[in-house]
Length: 464
Image 1: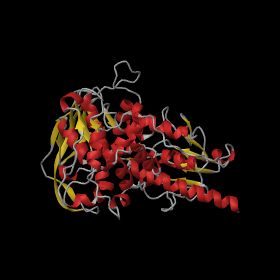
Image 2: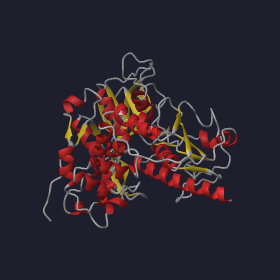
Image 3: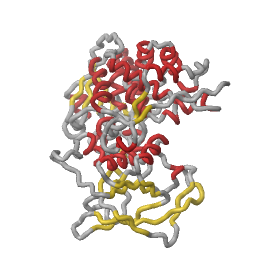
Image 4: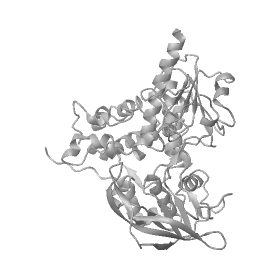
C-alpha cells in the first residue's frame, strides 16, 4: 500500500493566538478536504462506523467529498448527527472512528473529524439545511438540558413528529457546548448557536432559565404540562475538589466556575458585572481536556500557567491535540506532582501551593501505574489562583425532587443500558447525568438511543 501523508490542518501561530480567543484550528478548505478524502479506502466492512457513537455512515459521506459533492455529504451526516461542526471539532476521534480506521494500522488514519467539521462549516457558509419532512403525531416530550444529549434526543424526536420542548437552566442553550468549551476550540456564534438553530427549525422549542427541580418538577411536567414522556440530559455540573487544607481561600475555584464565567458570562472583560481576579500565576490541578481548556484560557488572560498532574505526561487523559496546543502556548507542565495544601495570605487570598513529587508504582485497578509520594519531596509553588479540574458529577437537584428514580453508587441516574429507560415509567436519561463527565459524542449517542426508545414506548402505550 502506497503511503499517503495526512493532509495538514492550518492553525493560528501560538504567539498570536495566546493574545485572543479566536479559533486555533482553521480547518480544511474544499481542495484540502477532497485531498484528505481521497485517502479513504472505502472499506466494505468499515470499522470506523463501529467506532462512532452515533453511527454516521463515514465512508459514504467521505465518498461524496471525494467527488466534490459536499451537499450530498451533508445529507448523509444529517441522518445521524445534527451537530457536525461541533463534533468535528471536539470529539476524540483518535479513540473512536479514527482509532478504528484500517489505514491507521500502517500509516496515519483518515482525518475523519476534520472532514466532518468541513462539511458542517460548508453547510453553514452556504446556508444548506438538510430537508426534513415532519408529520406531527400530537404527542409531547420534555427534554431537560440543552447540552449534546438533550439536543440529539430532541432532534431525533422532532423528526419523528413529536412536539419537543427543551428546558434549560441557564440563560443560553447549549449546555457544556456553550459554557464549558472555550471559543478558541468551539466558536459559539458561528458554530454552536447555528447548529442549535437548525434543531429549532425542526420545531423544537427551547425554554431558558427553567431549573427543573425548582421552577418545575418532573411531576409537574407530567401532571400539569401534559408531557407524555421526559428525557433527562442535565449533564454533570457538580465540581469535585481534593479535600485538602486551604480550598476555601479566595482564589480557589473549580474549572466549571472559571470556564462558565469566561465562556458564558464573559467575565474576562474589564467592563463585566462579574470580573475575574486571576493574578499573575495560575495552577490548574488535573490533566484532562477540561484542565487544558482552563489552562489555555488563563494563558490568554495573561497569566503564567502551570498544569499540576500527579501522573506522567504520557498518562495525561486529555486529547493529544489539546496537550500539544497547550505546550505550544507556553503552559508549564508540573507532572508527577500532587498538591497537599493551599497556603493563604492573611488577607484570605491564595499565596502558594504546597506539593509533593510522585513516582509511579504498580498498576492500580484501572491498569495505570499508581502514583506514590516520594518521601521528603515537599516544595511550594508560588501562585495566586488555583483552578480545580478534577472532574464533575451530576447535580442532585433533579433526583432529589423526583420520586422513583434509582441512582447508582456514584449518584448517577440508573438506566437500562440499551434504552436509557429509568426506574420511573416514562422517564429516560442519558449523557453525563448517567455516566458522569464524558464526551460530547457519547452523550449524543445516548440521546439518540433514548429518542428511539421513547418513540417505541409511546407507540406501545397507544396500542394498549
